[in-house]
Amino acid sequence: MGLKGNEKILDLGCGFGRHSLSLAKRGFNVVGVDFTEVFIDDAKNEAHKNNLKIEFIKDDVRNLKYNEEFDVVLNLANNLLGTMETDEENL
Image (tube, rainbow, N blue to C red; front, side, top):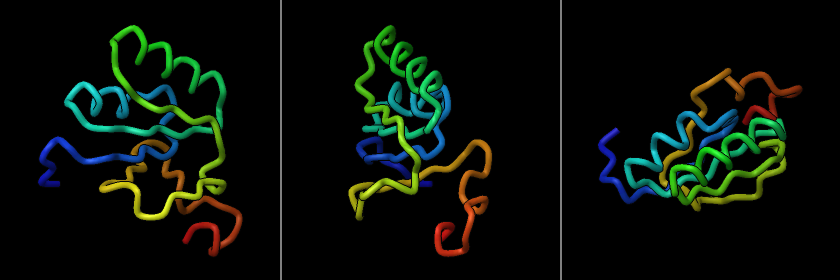
């Protein structure tokens, strides 16, 4: 992707934070979002144990109000996007 290491990354459906944690270890500024509380709690604990500054948010991605704050938006796990209830939500 040609990343330089200073990009801000949004990880949608981050789950336990696997990708978020890996990216933060490489120096990226990462925000992870998932609607499963136990996943977010585990991700926060792992970040804390590894002294990583990552913002983990427990929420439905459809509630996010970001607009061009991120250089990269990831959806790497379970094909989160494309499975919403309507085409408008997928967009």
